[in-house]
Each structure stands twice: as C-alpha cells, then as structure tokens.
Image (cartoon, rainbow, N blue to C red; front, side):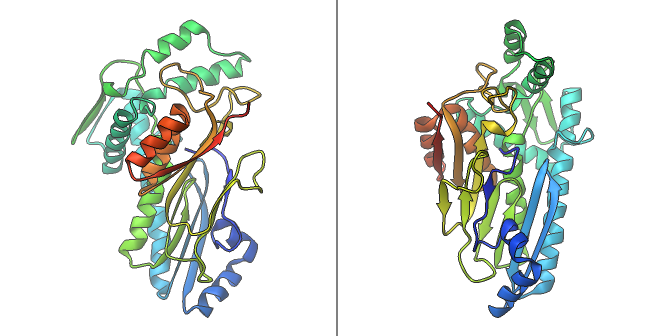
Length: 323
C-alpha cells in the first residue's frame, strides 16, 4: 500500500524512471538492437503515477497491451477506488449493501477477507471509518478523542462483511471498507495478466506497486530498488533480477502528525498507527498478495510478518523503526 513515490527503478531497469532519463527514442533503439520493439506509457491512477512498459517483437501486441492495461486499471478504479464517489465500493460504503457487485470488487473483497483471516486481523479492510476520524481531528489540530476512537474501533471487524456471488453487505450500520491495502497490487496483477494473454514476452508495470517478467529493452534483467521517502535516491534494498511482484508500505506516506508517528497505516485493534517498523517491502507470487502482505507486516512487525509472507510463498524486507 503506497501513497507517495518512495521506490525507484534503478538505471538499467528501463522502467518508468529509466524511460524518463533515456527517452522513448533511446528505449526503442535499445530494443531494436535486440530485435524487439518497446512501448511505454505513463498515466495517473489510484492517486499516483502509473507506468507500463512492454517489449517484444510484435509492435501491435505491445500497443494493445498498453491499451488493455490502462483499460483494466480504469475498470478496477470504477469497481474499488474510494477516490471515485461513483465507484461500486463507494456505493457499498454509502448504502451498506451492494447487489450484483462487479467481478473485480467481488474478487478483491474475498481476497482481502481471506488475508484478514490469515493475518489474525492485522490486515482488516474495515478500518475505513478511521480515515475520516483521523482526518477531521488532524484538520482541527489534534488527535482523536479517546471515546471517539474507541467507538470507531468497535466498528472494525472483517467478519462483519457478508459476501455472496450476488451481494456484498455489512452486518451492522457504520461499517465501511477500504481495499487500498491491496488495490494497487491487484492492478499490477491485471495489467501483467493482460500482457501475458497477448503473448507479450517482457513487461514492467508500476501501478504504485510493481510487477515484472522477462527482461528490459537492453536485454538485461529488470532491476528494482527500494528507498525511503527521506532518501529516495539511496535505495537500501536492490533486486538485480526482479521478476514477480513487489509492494512497499511505509507510515510516512500519509501522515496525520508532523513527525509521521500518526499515519494512514492503522492497527485495527487500537485504531492508531503501530511503530514496530519504519517500512516493509513484500515480494510475492501476485501483486495483491505482495501489497496485502506489506500492509499486514507493517502492523504485525518483523517476526510475525515474515512468517506470514513465507507461509504464502513470499518474502519480506523490513526497515527497522528508528530508535
């Protein structure tokens, strides 16, 4: 789950930042020297910049991958983005129930609830009521009152979400759901799957979280660096052969206090931000899983978070909290 640009693709990766520095002509030259074409496009979605890069011998397939990739992103936003008042998820939160939920919302909700159960509730999509509580208190220059926080925490329980093929409903008034903890990662899943269906052999996608397969335009492996907000040009973690999916969670993304101690990553049990780690990065077989694992691990801390990631075939890198 990410709210700011805190990770960068290192030189040689030929992803979004490499494309910006090399330029589209340079990327195309590198690709053609390898007998390939390349296509890159940058846009805005999920409240951040997204970038899709594809390489392969079939230019038409690459163009179609770009088009379908962004179509998948827009479809996902229509289903599950809280930035859109008309999204299916926004309507569910407003009305407390939603008939005939779109397939993407249904799939992502079921996934989020499964992860909530697996994490013992450390990941809980029903933390959404905490957002307006903390936002309003912050705008008033204070932290939420203890009584208000307790009342809001009482609404948080992933088990109150009822799901069937034709309905999503909340078990009581006041419950609301956010899927931001898995949304961008699921976006990467959808884009990668669309490209693979078209037979595109190489891809790097940045939807706020990352997915990649194949190789870069120059024939080198994709490279991914993970940095912090304070030192964005000094990655503390580098994957020189990145393939699969990665996601990062950091409390500095959306601070509710000047020092960032209160932020958008909530412990569902307390309604406040945990301080066990500074930042977590998860690598997993799917983008939604990587995204959710990084969020859960931020709440759980390193030993439990690492065990959860390994349980699902992933891995975890942790930036310890400052002491």
